[in-house]
Length: 216
Ligand code: SF4
Image 1 (cartoon, rainbow, N blue to C red):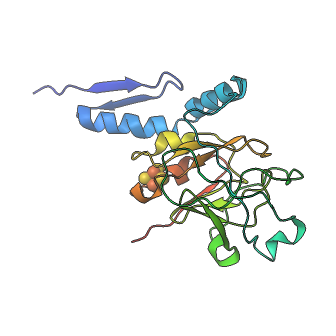
Image 2 (image 1 turned 180 degrees about the vertical axis):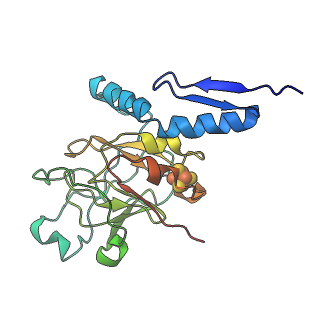
């Protein structure tokens, strides 16, 4: 009795995947596409080469004001004083209390990985569409760590986009962060509550800016 073997060849790195079960092969292909280094490098190169968008239509921009920068870590950072915006664009729900604009311009890109114990060291400074923001923040150059279960250190995030591509339940959307030294957009966990804790985003992030806290 003969067995049919189905194959998939990655067009970016040339990896050959083979399996007799097409469904299994499809899953193998999806996992490979999430982890393929060459594919990610091509994506990053395309992002660098692409002209910067003049305005965000599909992404979110918001005005939020820093209400209480974390005391200890904020010692060297001036407090942001931008007023709260009346509304926030995008598909989120909850309150927005901090601003992405301000006077914080003397910052450089922070190095990963994200501190897995940041919740013991930082304080929640405010919220953006209901998503917690852990200070210190000093917009636009210092934005802190965002999220409660799906957490990203925005000061480390380089907008690689691997997390957005990897997420099977579409937790993320781009958030424009002009003036930030690491990248002018961030992967915003606006649908954080949809997370199924698969860890895909944490595993694919090149600078290790993502930390998932499983509720269970
Ligand atoms: S851990 Fe959550 S946010 Fe990350 S890829 Fe999986 S479902 Fe998406």
